[in-house]
Structure formats: C-alpha cells, structure tokens
Amino acid sequence: MTEKAKFKYSAHEGILELEGSEEFVSQHFESLTDLIRVISRHVVVEQHQQENATEKAGAERSASVSIEAEEDNASQASQTVADIQNEGIAQYPNYFSEINGKLKIVSDIPGTTVKSKMTNAAILLCYGSKLLGDEMIASKDIRTVCEEHGCLDSPNFSKVFSDRTIFLSDGVKGGNKNVKLTFQGEKKARELLESAQS
Image (cartoon, rainbow, N blue to C red; front, top):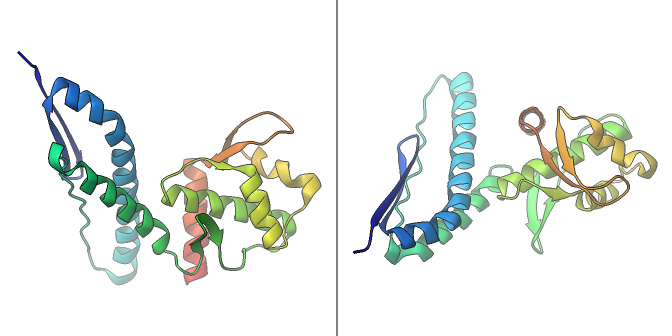
C-alpha cells in the first residue's frame, strides 16, 4: 500500500498545497522550495509597498498570493514563478531592465564619490538580482556595471564588499566572489530606490 503524503504552505493565507503519494510529494518538494522562496519574497515586497502606501496615503491595501499546485498543473506553477520574478524588477522600471538575459541598471547611480557610487551600484544590482530570484551575484557582474556607469575604481573595487553589514560574500581573496545582500543591505537598496522615485 502506498503512503499518502501532504505538504501545505501558507504565505499569509496564500496556499501552496501538494498531496499525493509519498514519492510524488518528496519528488516535487525540492522544486517547490524555490517557488516558496520566490512567493515569500514577493509577499514581503508587497507588504513593504503596502506599508509605504499606507504611510503616504493613509489607505490600506491587501496583498495575497494564492497558488495551488497539483500533479496535473505543475507546468502552470512554473509559469507563475516566472510571472512573480518579472514583477520584481517591473516595480522599478526607471532603475532595472533585463537586456539579453542580463540584469542592467538603466538610470544614474546615486552617490557623490566614486566609492559611494560603486557601493550603491553593487547594492542595487544585488537587490535587482534578488528580485529576479537569484540572491547571489558574481562580483565580476558588479564590476561590469560599475564600468558601464563610469564609477569603477579598480584598485579599491574589492573593498566595497568589506562592509559586512551590507554584503555577504564567498570566494577566495583576489578571485571571483559571489555576493549577496544582508537584511540591512536590502533595506539600504529599498531606501535608494524610494529616494530616487520621490
């Protein structure tokens, strides 16, 4: 007799439910983990936008993401992930664009010094990458963006990532590193984007 298994997830009353044989649930659980992370990020972004809208306009908006995944509509769930990821940078059309499959910053980088512009470029690119569903970004991609925006100080580039309150990185010294934002780094990115939209 085959064991029945059930997995249920609720992102503030949005539901992702998977039910079937234990083998089926185990098999799809791994692929759904990424979906859950994307949905959770999307809910957090929507909540942040709601808080800002409430503070500015005194109005309340409700956000909910509801996705039901079953054995028959697994392909529909993967389409939903793509839609959510595209909505991420679509919130900031004046800042981000995806050109030839690469995330680009399409506006001026804020900052008064080359160092502050490099740091802000790194923060914004990491945040945009996270909105697309990839928390880690290669430092060489950040270097390319700094070059494109004329704010690269090559000898001091790696020092940008030394602020552990903003960046987490892995890799070897002098080699290519993968970088992601801390919670404080994400907060700083949202502040930069909001101040530019004001």
